[in-house]
Length: 177
Ligand code: IMP
Image (tube, rainbow, N blue to C red; front, side, top):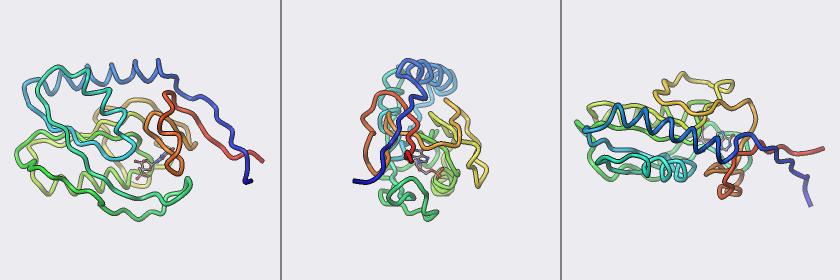
């Protein structure tokens, strides 16, 4: 019935909560009064975005884009496709992209390219987690949460084959044997 998986906790829900609070404080300082549009990159960012915006007590808007890069399993196919594009106008607006993880950087740079062409007033990136060891393309992360080792992680929105997004903590998951 396939191989066993080993889950090792990497970040507890308390560490995640503290990180989201820290990022929200930084974002509040920079965006208060600017009525920004926060754009979540689906699906992985939905939980982070939901927690983050509850800590932001000023007018803002929420949008989503969805891309597909990963096939089944934990290896990227390297190909990126936009499967849900932006539904609102961002020209002249302050835009903050919300990412679950920046891994190779291909997805984030694709999104920044796509959004940048729409001429926002500003365009920045907030990533809950960063896996710099796997970067293939440089990405400037303006608001960075937790640094991840070169391992596959799940939980708090992040999946393995669509599973484990619902875990409240973040785990490293590895095949055993
Ligand atoms: P990229 O390699 O930076 O383009 O990341 C693409 C997407 O792959 C991310 O937005 C995640 O959804 C997913 N991803 C990358 N690394 C992990 C991981 O360790 N666990 C779960 N998903 C990941």
